[in-house]
Length: 365
Ligand code: NAD
Image (cartoon, rainbow, N blue to C red; front, side):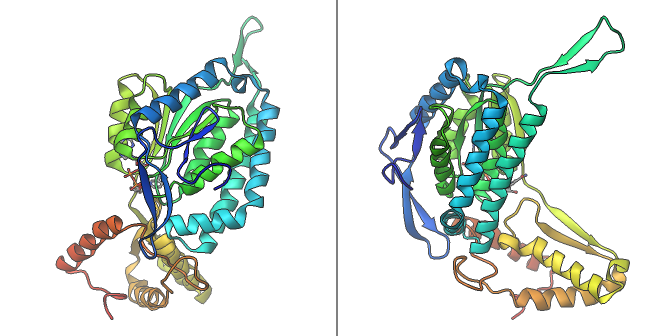
């Protein structure tokens, strides 16, 4: 992080701050559970200050009225800065979330792509459009307007990618925002705010409060000056966000957890190449980022005639996945993101074994 002290990770109205309470949080490297960064542990007063800044910037600032071509140009500058900082940002994402360095780099590429995508989209869709209403006397015009102050709450598995899918479209459309990244993986989102400042975004448009869900997140969801909440995370928290946001009838977007099957039919395995691809894709779907993906292929449904061969090959390849610290050369699968996640995951394995599941790799050793 640059331009401010390490623990000043709250950005409000163009200023980097520590938490009003002075509280901090250690950010742990999932590979060894050692502290490698310290951030501000924001609370309700920090959140209120951030919302006030975003409100002011929306109601009285220039950003909502900036021509779409200029907003798009800023988004493209941010994409260029992301490309410039690909290595340090990829490394930061890898250390913060425990993913492999290569995955961290690919995430940053996708984040840059998202900024370019929404820059193109807003230029294409930015103006009013007359729709043929079937009569010369009737003129229908579609005008795209920003919603206002957007609150964004993101999870730990794809910290910056999840942030970019909220930040880039919101900025492209002329909104202002307050983002609250997951309390355990906030670092690249803080870095993104630095890049937005560097790219020339006006003060107060982009605000960040690092801190926990039960205070910062909950306050954002209920705050009367927030117009829209975009949340990605688990079902339990998402339900609370929807309930809190309903009181002031905010617009709400929720992306919640999944439990997705991959389906493999025998005809897909009719050739060696087809079989190989299907096994590879099933392996990747289940184990990328140690399976901590909302769209992970966590169940596999296989046509009976190819089941035994498929499972045997899948188990053989799963055994060979190189586990380790995400930043080490050759490692294919990093650690789970936190001890808390391990404690959540292990009982599922125990329950499956108790119900008669047959381990074919890992535990089978
Ligand atoms: P989580 O629900 O615990 O936390 C997500 C975010 O919500 C965090 O920033 C957290 O601080 C905040 N939060 C927690 N309680 C809150 C509250 N009461 N009010 C407001 N905010 C609150 O989820 P997580 O463990 O960080 O993330 C993993 C989950 O996210 C998994 O269920 C995964 O499937 C899901 N996920 C879904 C998608 C998707 O696109 N559908 C993508 C990634 C992750």
